[in-house]
Structures are given as C-alpha cells and as structure tokens.
Length: 439
Image: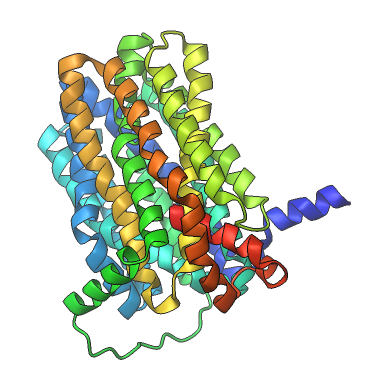
C-alpha cells in the first residue's frame, strides 16, 4: 500500500487534465526531436568529417536562444503563452519537414543544415522560455509544481532514451532522412494536445513599461538577488563546459569506439537512461529540502564521469559512464529549474525563466564551438577531460556560499508559503530555498 501511494505521489501532477495532455503530446514529439538530433549529427559528420562543423551546427541552432531569450521572456509575461506555443510548435514542424525533404531527395548541403538549424534556434528562443513559464498555468495545485517540473525532465529523458536508440537503428537501415521525417510528423501530437486544453480566459496585464524597461526590471530582479543569480550561474557553467560532450559523441562513437550510427544511439540512450533515473529520483521527492547539497554532488559526479569517459576505449565502460553523466546533468539542471520556479514571483516568471533558458541553451553553443575548435588541435579525449575538470571547479563557489544563500532565501519562503512543508518547518524551507537559488 505504501509503495502504491509513493508511486501515485510520483505522478501527482498528472491529475491536472491540461498538464496530462501536454505530457503525452510533448512526450511523443520529443522522441522525434531526439531522433532528428542524432540523425543530423551523424549526417554532418558523415558528409564533412569535421569536428569543427559539428560544433558549428550546434552553435547555429542554439545561439539565437542566447540573443533572443531575454526578449522572449518579456513576451511570455505579456502575451498569451498558450497561443505562442501553438505558433512555435507549428513553425518547428515546418522546419523539420523542409529538412526531411532535402535529406530524402539527397540535395542536402551543409549550408542548408546551418541555415535551418539557425531558423530552429530562433523558434526555440521563444518556445523554451514560454514553455517553462506555461507549466504553472497547466497545474492547478501549486504544491504539484515541483512534481510537474520533475516529470517534464522524466519525459524529456525518456525520449532521450528511446529516440537515439531508434534513430541509430533507422539510420543504419534506411538513412537519416526517415528519422527527420518522423520528427516532423511527431509535432502533430503536441500541437493537438495544446488545442485540446481547457484554460482560463487570458487576461492581458496592462503595463506601461516598454520592452527594454521590462527586460531591465527582470534582469535587476534575477541578478540583483544572489540566490537566483547563483542558480542561473550554475546552469550557465554546466551548459558551457558540460553540454559540448553531446557534440563530440559522434567522434567517440566512430573513431574511438570504432562503431557506427547505432553505437552513437547506444551512447545517447545510455545517457538518457541515466537522466531518466535522475528525473524519477527528483519526482519522488516531496520537497526541495536538501537540493543545494544534491546539486553539489551531482555537478561533481557529472564532471568526474566526463573525465573518465574521455579516456575510455571500451564500449561497455563508456556506456556505464554515460549513465552517470546523464544522471548528474539532469538532476543538476532540473533541481535548479525547480528551485527557480518555486522562488520567483508570477509577474516576473517569464523573464526569470528566459534567463534560465538563455543560460541553458545560450551558453551551450559557445561551449560547442570552443570544444570543436580545441578538439581539432588537441584531440577529443583531452578536450572532454578538460570540460569535466572545469565542471568540477565551477561548483566550488556555490558550495562555499551555500549556508549564506540559505539564510537569504528563508524570509521569502516564510512569506510566500509555497511549499507545504514550510508551514510546519521553516528551517526546512530555508534549506529548500538555498538549493533553488544555488541552481
């Protein structure tokens, strides 16, 4: 009986009809997204044999998020988030369809990939911030918000487990084009789920401030408060130093482990399995208490696993280490997201989450370009080992400042009473808060 209650508690956010629809639709679409990502990485490396161009494609797909993210946050606070998401998902389907046609007709060139990746990056610049802020509208009970965020991570990483594995097999059998076509079709699921939602009528908040003033206010709110700033910095550093490992994986799969597209799929699938385990670990937690210490541990675990992976030439060991990288990365990222979502005020949620998205998506392309350039000079092994070492170093300031951050957050939780446990234990609340901010 206790096990059943624990299991039902793990999925409690699904009691909200709108969130349940989103969870199903987005889950299907994300499998297609991961299939396209693997297919595109393999296609670029097959056509060019260039590690630098692998980084360039990632750069072109993610740098728009760095530029547009903060402005997208202002839009997410002013406009109907539901309608914005319908538009962004439809445009993403158009992008995938165009890419699929070019690959299937064998007319694809590297400039096509770079241009369409940049187009998708512009779309994602608006989509990610809006989607992060939209979660609170889909979940009626505020106490289920942290569970919804953890389930989002579970869904994302279940797709990362399934998508690359299927893609690796499909690429070997019929080529990259079919994977991209499946992704295009998968957008129907998420668009359908958005259209089926029953939401409260949208009420636009009349604001006299212009876009730049709203952006400035959001920036001062987020970066003027050390706990929020610390959380965003953790995400930015993990994205800058850690995320490039996905860009380098095709090189490890083919040149270090002497495999094919299926090997790349297995590596990504193993990372996805580890990440899924991490997301489920967070989903079963009933409060954010202790997340600060967990972030320190998982960031360090991620960095050490990357270092070990960089020296591995055995597939079995590499797959095992991918499990640890996936677990460490997603628990760190999702914990920061949870803490931020719990901490920020509703009228600034879109802007703060846009800074989170900018840190997550915007720093990754810079890291990918740097990693690709360095790997051309010193090799992928030493490059990835350096990335892992920098991840371990970057968590030290957060660990040192954790007690101070906890004290700063405590009054906010006392006033807002966001987490039920806080009502009976303010000390627990201060622990929660610290973790959030640190992320």
